[in-house]
Image (cartoon, rainbow, N blue to C red; front, side, top):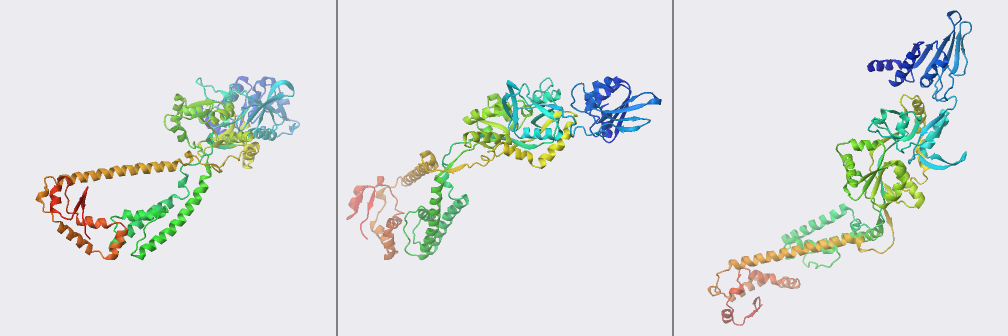
Length: 635
């Protein structure tokens, strides 16, 4: 049966259906099923022919008014037949008679009795200015104000402003209707209940308690099954509104004067330059620097970078040239760094910590606020995995609470401002909350997250199969193409763009505290800890060498060794002869003579504990012993 109706509906969208019957029951069933299965779309034209009188068809006035239909009533006998054609105007008061638009008689033929054509576009512009009931609830796009009714003193009157109110006024003027706002008793937008019914404004539209609901409503599959949506005047996404932090100095700001690539270049230049100079000096300078490894050369260039003094080599000019060039480069770097650092220390950073859903979930101290009684609530409770499943589970530990749209302004001013809550709302709604707070306080106390999630398609709703929707769509499309809705958004909130790109860094003049530069102290402490670890490591290595030397000389008796100090002196003299006077002078300046002496005594390893000091004193004349080793006299 359903497939047959569906095929007939497809064909009926291109044709005129003629129904001839004098049976009230048949006509009632036909009208009921036509609306239920959406057989007669607006493009389908219906001609109902009957001999029943108008009072007998009054029960079907509402059905006729929703269809593109003409009622043709035949009066008289075949010899004196008369036909009258009627149309039913939508949203007419109860008891209103159909509008007589044409007649036909054998003698006079077809005559129009109204200025309306047959099958007029009844919903494109109403003829009699009907009064519609519109379900409305306060939100960022449809701001609700309660004031006294001048016609009924003492009785509160609800007044709405904002872009949705302007859109509704625009449609009312274009389609020629008046309206009254009706709030839902529960204050909800509309969610499916356990018994299959719907709450909020969606339920009011389903039960046809109202003819239209402004919203704007989030388009969802479940809602689409029970109501019809208009084309979207607004497409948005969910965003996060959170409190902005207080101005503070970035503790790691001392790293910002130079870009990361510049820091990497400086580090690489020090390493490469130190290694290159060491290799060239070691290979071509006859070991003039007397450096045991390239780290000592590298530290010289680090000292220059830190503006400390070094000893300039006195043998080769190429080393001096390298030092001069490095000094010129570091001069530019250090001056640039110091100037930028002074500027950055005067900059205060304003934190905006929650820019994504993941950041909110990873912080156990923050609580999320979501809209109660909306389609999103059903969605979060239905997902079985992913980040929205994590958000739904956060409700079990008290990190997610549900609030109505009317409670949002108060929550932003109290809970969110406190710093331990964030609110999820449509992007333009978040901007509206921030703009309203700026208008009151003159400060940008809140921020909107950069991440948008769950794209939102908003629209107005009406009952299913309502021909009013196509008429509204035509007007809404023209309005959005002209950019009127977004213009209304801006004009409704005069400060809507002030805090959109509010700076997160500001410049001030004040004293610096330890917390402002704690990053430098952290690096200092880490450096000292590393130095302490290296110190203990060196002591450990020295102890291991001493233990190894002691084990290697165990059992080696001094009396078994024929220690000829004359040979030792000869070795020392040979080492001295290999060095000319200029080299000696340079080595003395660098305090490295001890290395030459040590090289002559390197192979004579013995322990003082096993040395018979008395025999040594008797065998050595003119030589003295000092504590911890031997003192050698001579050149």
